[in-house]
Amino acid sequence: MADRRRLVLPSRLRSRAGLLAVSLGALLWGTAGVSVQIIHERSGLSAVPIGFLRLGIAGVAVFAVRGLRGVRAAVAVTRADPWVVAGAGVGLGAYQALYFIGVQDVGVSVSTLISLAVAPVALTVVAAVRRRRLPALLQVGTVVVAVAGLVLISLRPGSGSGSHPLIGLGASFLSGLGYAATTILNRRLVRRADPLLLAGLTSAIGAIVLLPLAVASGLYWPSDALSGGYLGYVGVVTTVAAYGLFFTGLRTTPSETAGVLTLLEPLAAAVLAALVLHESLSGLGVVGAVLMLAAIAGLYLRAPEVEPHEAVTAA
Image 1 (cartoon, rainbow, N blue to C red):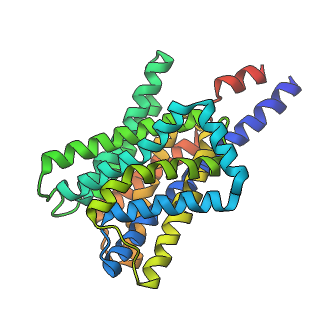
Image 2 (image 1 turned 90 degrees about the vertical axis):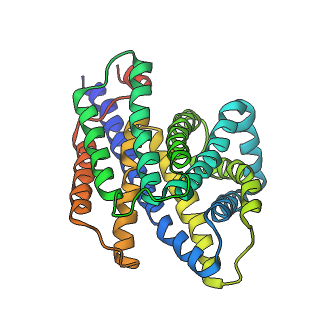
Image 3 (image 1 turned 135 degrees about the horizontal axis):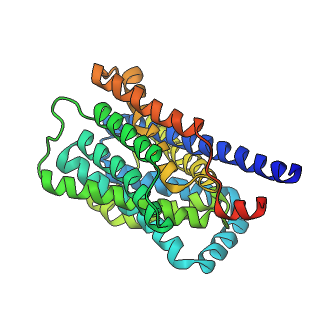
């Protein structure tokens, strides 16, 4: 009995650490929006070229630090599971491109709402299908409360304005599904790959996917030093560090739980925009923030789920 307790305790600690790692990654993602807006205002770069440069910088940074050993490790990971690696990298570039299309055609608020709300719902459904049982009522309630909070914090007066709303809605929906799919693929990869190496590898593949769209949208390196500094920040901190934390957390955090935790991203972005860009947060937005925090707090307070392979070890 004592041995079993010693084995279960580290499992619970790893679960809590995984939740924290995913949460920190999402908070770092939340700082990207303000940075990208500053880059756009100072340099004139549009979202797709910024997205390409962000992923390109991330890939270069990782392999510059890891050197030839990193390249060999990336080749080994790719050879071991080529289709999963390709799917994760292409998916990263594709769902970002689809999100940018959604922003252009239906507006930032609605596109963000749809793309981020679809992911936790889709991940919860996929998990239920794979386990062949309905999700627990508490789990469904957590997703509902979190998405409701996202709705309140995302929708503002004038939301939904865009040139092609139907195309924008479809692109945003597909972006959310793409994010959910890559989360599942990455969770499979993190069991055998180093999280930072995986962040660099998928970013490099994603950059290749975005390159044609970035060139067509007007790709150049800004002459403004501050814009270049912010590009370095979004590439290294909000991509390498954030995805490294996210992938680390995925080792012990179920995909559907990670999907809810990543809703910290728009919450952090809204708070940061209010502090830095002086954008107002409405009363409903404050209620939405409270709901999102309540849902995320519930994930930390409830008993952690034990992964199947850990349950076997603990027995």
